[in-house]
Length: 227
View 1 (tube, rainbow, N blue to C red):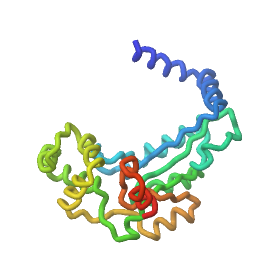
View 2 (cartoon, rainbow, N blue to C red):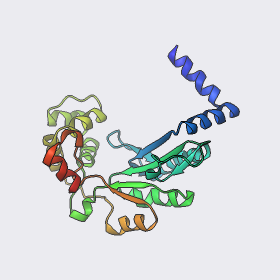
View 3 (cartoon, helix red, strand yellow):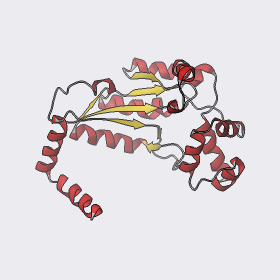
């Protein structure tokens, strides 16, 4: 029954007057949605694993075009402020981590659409740090298979996403992963970060070592936020 009602609701929202009324109602309540993207791939790239959230370039552009049709794409920092146009919901865009695709794939789309995004970067290349642990894990799974890697790490994980979740909560597993493969970093360097800023994009800090902040407190939390 729940699935039937969900399908019926989607069908109703396809009716133009109903859809427009729903958008006005959402905007009137001051609703805004922050959208978070990670890696954006070239359209002809190999399908990514389920370890790192990824989206093809053409799909990102289409999503942003549709969001711009039904609402307003605004800088992330404007979401908490009162809406100027209360007839349309607002959407803010953010992009995590230091992928080179932020400059190669994402920036041209945002510039073409006249949209501002916020990029939360770790700045790993500025400190000569290597790959993120999840990039190393992705490479290991691609080379050796999920079963071999989970046995090697001594964990029980049914999927790559499950394995990544376990590693995210364990600095010990992260160290094992990063020392098990020699993966050249593929991150934004200073000129690409400068290019984002000079293009009018906002640049935020995502912590240097990508710690789970909910697991930290006191001095550990202060250091993670400052370094």
